[in-house]
Length: 149
Image (cartoon, rainbow, N blue to C red; front, side, top):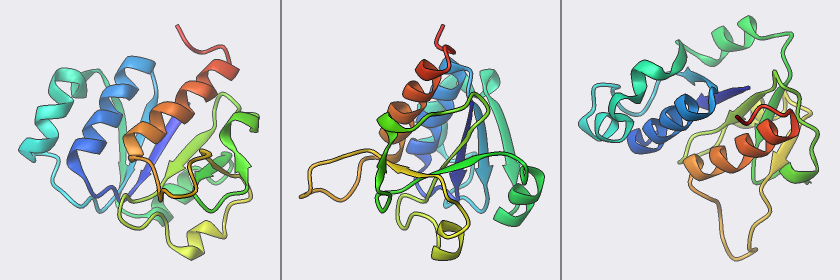
């Protein structure tokens, strides 16, 4: 299972996702530029020693990432989706794409994908923290594919 972060903004969130990836054997893909440096103390404080246990790939831009995985199924997590994550049928090699904390993904990227899902929420709220969203959706995807150990 793959987690893809599009230009993440917040070092603590990215670190928490990398840590989650180490714990659940998720491959993490970072599409640059990040809104912080990976040497940032806020990042290091959360990621701790899990960085060495993680499978992380970095890409200079979205096009580089897209070309490498053009045959892969990419599933966009978005508050604009109609389909809920718990009714979606995940595959074990899915690439779960999460947008920037501040802005999601640009409309042109949004339009590239037919598989778009959301986490149902209270109508009075905007969104969940991206690290929490990754944990919720990744756990369901792993459960469906009998990959939780």
